[in-house]
Amino acid sequence: LGFSVYEKGFDYRYALFVLLCAPEYFLPLRNLGQSYHIKINALAAAKQLAYWFDENNSLEKNSNKPLLLNVTQAPFSFSLNKVTLVYPDGRVGVNNLNLKIKAGKTTALIGASGSGKSSVLRALCGFLKPQDGSIFINDVSYDTFDTKDLVNHIAYIPQQPKLFYGTLFDNFSMGRSDITHERVIDVLVKLNIKDFINNFPGGFCYILGDDGKRVSGGQARIISLIRALLTDKDIFLFDEPTSSLDEELELKVLDGFFNNFPNKTVVIAAHRTNLIKYADEVIAIDGR
Image (tube, rainbow, N blue to C red; front, side, top):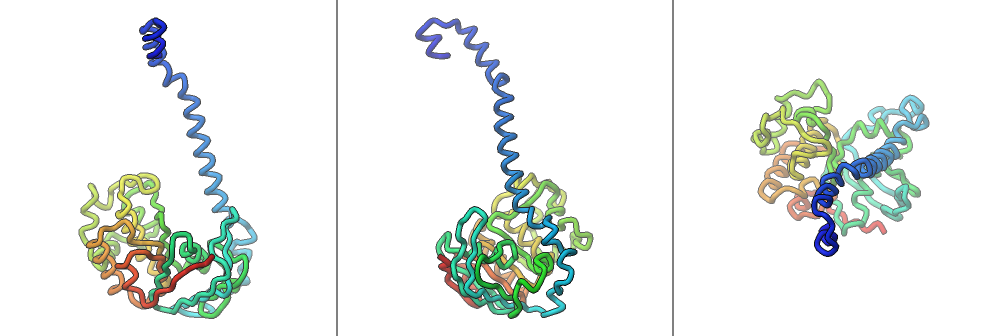
């Protein structure tokens, strides 16, 4: 329009009219594009959830399988025997991996990006089934137990923690009636960050946006860590849990965690030196 006005004498009043109308004219097309992306995201999410709604995988369907605590007790060890993990899109997570993780200890998994650390954590959660090989918990095959029962004993923090629209306290409690403000504060004190709530206007009532909006990456990781600790599980699987924290805050949180939550089986995918030094054992992963 500018060149038409400048070079061809197009009436600037018409040009201004077109500029004013253009956003409204193209709005339906833009909305269509947004709706398309929302649909694609929804389909991807539904695909991930499909396993849990499959009647063949339901707890009721597999009620003949024993519960974990009826067969063995905490602390829990893990072993992977010649495990190959393949994602639905064909990507290989790890190939022919052998791995042993000691019960009641902290194990750091190290390796280059793409080496399979996150894939191992997902497999230990039961989210990724081995294409070949076997996974054992306390020397009992994962196939012995119902996946949903196994998940009940695991607290997992992925690389991108999932937060939802609601108050800060809602994101801590996840709807559990036994979680109180006092329990949250107790965890904060143990993590050496008792003033963490004061960083949010309104404290526990502060509203988080969808998928972690209105909080920083570091705050999201601390919220997810607190949420995991409130579940009081025996197994913690953490994927770079302190990657967005500055060094001073990272050391405070790690000191608090390892000094106040003992006798847990902790498996951490780690790059940062501060995190690795707290591990009882460090295992290099090169699952390709």
